[in-house]
Length: 264
Image (cartoon, rainbow, N blue to C red):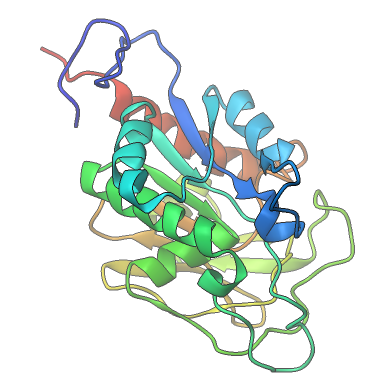
């Protein structure tokens, strides 16, 4: 936890009245749209991530990918000092690995610069004890970076054609998990836009929830404060599903507690 300060400063900390600042990781257009070289490049993230954080009482701050190795660690240190929580966003393309059980490219192969940047972000946030929420690819990043494992092939039936605010399958939350306690349910309906799945969770994590067909969809840390990963997209269902709102609310609330100086 940070040392108390008056107001907000670059060194961290905030007064009790400041809204929590949530760092939202971005995507590089060169790694998803194929543009680069002399063409203008963009850092971007889906609007609904930003909207959900804001509606839950946070201030979203976009974290652009830094790829220059000499300054990567220092840039990430500065970014994490400026925020109270880290949201690892989804997005990305597995390069057509959606048919059958063929081998899918790794997260690093899909977006190498983003992978190295988000890995540094995650490790730095974890060292600081900062609340972290990983969504879809962000969930898979948590698993892979912290010692878990993705399944080598692709998973069928988890890339819906319906809009993001429509649920496509059920999710069972295990009784006694933090997710079960916070969301106050053992069952929920979620959306689904992934073709890769998690085979093994990292040490120090527990599986909070499985899809109806047995895919790991929700994990939580059992030893490192608020560190959640979800395979679905609660930000897309924020306006239509109370449980999705409660999930984002819980993350932003934890970030607010992290950012407040300890009481004297």
